[in-house]
Image (cartoon, rainbow, N blue to C red):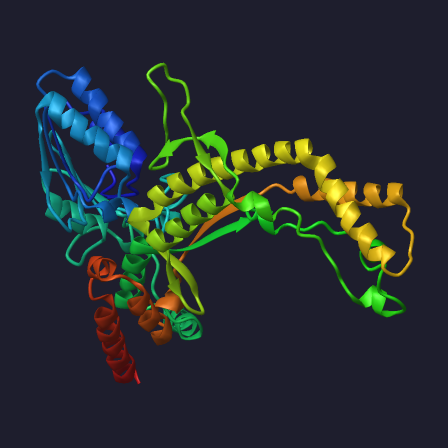
Length: 432
């Protein structure tokens, strides 16, 4: 039995599957497959004694020590099988006791690095992160590392069979000098910050139908202008201003959720371009905080709400756009008649005579292009970077942009950042 082990989900599952009397699982969190293995063993072995201690904080899943499904399964098994599921905030060591075998390991934060694969061809290629201990762990560990006073030769040790040379140390120092690591405290603050806030790009194109214009050749629009000036003066027809307050029926939503009547038929409600614009403005006001020069931020705990409400807004906007297009088709003749009459009257002032059929065809093509424009709604999220969190201007603008409730939720991260930076500066000075 090797003392030093590459511990991953597969090795935990294998050991749990051998349990006959008891399982004690102590770790920051648990991944789904490991939780399922524990549930399966509980079903297979009568009176299996189980104790589980975890850190139930949400950051455990964010860092990658476990996942939400694993936590949910553990809670379900504990309730169903009546075993102890205990909490230890800040727990960062892993211990698995199966009958009389003890496995101690350093859990892998999978948001930062991958867990060991467990299939290394040689000892020097292994990435051990755990110890599998028997009845006499002290003696076992001493032989595993060829400790002084044992009869185990260095090249027979499980780990540490290569010497760390001065050249190897210098290579590492040179690499750190060229690409310094992010100070630990500052990296932690960046992670905490990025778990609370994200940049959000909420853009809407083609929603203001009343602002759309009919574009007709200058030869028609500027027939009353003579000489070279005709080609320099751009004229357009705003023929849809009356549509701003025109209401149409679209699917109804309540807080972003579809609404049905007692017979499960979708309910409808009336909206207009103006009311949809107010809806969009309210979403931006409620959820997005403008940081001048950097973009707009959203609190991550509001992200799902905004996504749901934007999805509802998109459905209503697209339904509104389709209804307006249908009304345009019905009123196309009237719009073309009015536009052609206006242009012809301008041309008549100078005695110009226009080809009426060509003019109407030109207006029809412009109308088709205008009504076929489909609105586009985009909602894109981006993480805050370390470079941004260390920028004093950015931090100051964030503090100014966030409402008091959100600043309280963030904690005094600005103070923590400055304190960590000062500590890092002292460390750098002492190194020199």
